[in-house]
Length: 62
Image (cartoon, rainbow, N blue to C red; front, side, top):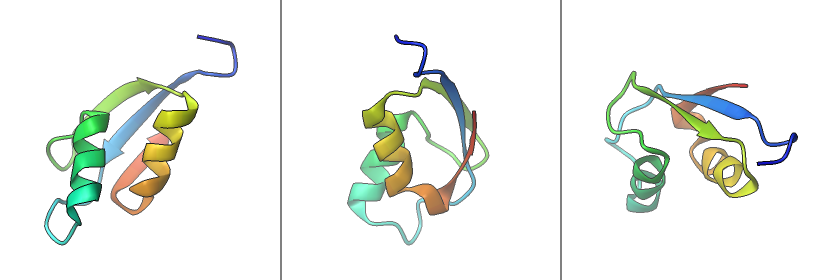
C-alpha cells in the first residue's frame, strides 16, 4: 500500500430496496450487508470506483 492509499470508512446509509442488481453486488463487494453498518477498506483506485458507483447509498470518511 502506498502513502496515497489510506484507509476509508464506508457506512451504508441507503437500503437494497430499489437498487439494481449491479449496485447490490457492489455493496456486497465492499462488505456492506445492512443499512447502518460500516466497514474500513483500503483507498485503492478500484475501491474508490466502487464507492462512486453507489455514492448515493453510502457515507464516506477518510
